[in-house]
Image 1 (tube, helix red, strand yellow):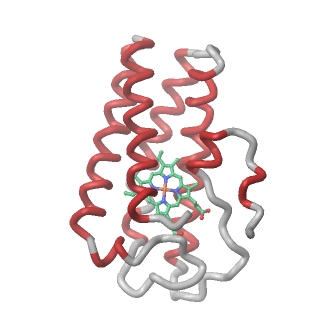
Image 2 (cartoon, rainbow, N blue to C red):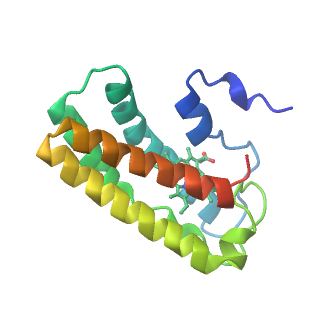
Amino acid sequence: MHTRILIPTLALAILSACSSQVEDTLPGQPIKHRQEAFKDILRVFEPMGTMLRTNNYDAERFESKAAALAERHERPWDYFVEGSFQPPTRARAEVWSRADAFEREVEHFLEATEALLLAARSREIHDIQSAYDTVYNSCRSCHGDFRDR
Ligand code: HEC
C-alpha cells in the first residue's frame, strides 16, 4: 500500500495525487511538466473550494484564483505527447487509445474554467458555487477515466 491517503480533506484526496519519486527520463520531461502543471492548477483551485466550504467567500480573492486557474488551464495538455505512457506517469493508456474522449474532457474543462471566471466576476454566490461544482466534476470525471488511482 502506498501512503497517499495522508491528505486530510476528501476534496484533496480525490483531486490530488503525489508524484512518485521515479524520474521522468524522456527528452524534455513531458511527464514531469504535465504533473507540475496539474499541481499548479490544484494550488489555485483548492483555496476556492476551501472558501466555499468554510463560508469564507472573499470576492476579490476568489476572482484572482479563478483568473489564475483560467491562465493555467491550457498548460498540461500539450505535454501528453505520444510515447509518454511510461513511469512515472499515472495517466492511463486510454489517454492515447481514446484520444477523442480525452479531448472532449479537456474541452469541457476549458469551458468550465472559463465559466467559473465569469461567475467569479459576477460575484453571485449561487452562480459561483454551481460553476465551481462544474469544474470540480470535470476534474473528477477525467480522473475517473484517464488517471490511475
Ligand atoms: C482532461 C483530463 C483531466 C482534467 C480535466 C483534470 N485532470 Fe488532473 N490529471 C489528469 C491526468 C491524466 C493526470 C496524470 C498525469 C500523469 O501522471 O502523467 C492528472 C494528474 C493530476 C494531479 C497529480 C499531479 C502529480 O503531481 O502527479 C493533480 C494534483 C491533478 N491532476 C489535479 C487536477 C485538478 C485539481 C483538476 C481540475 C481543476 C484536474 N486535475 C483536471 C487528467 C485530468
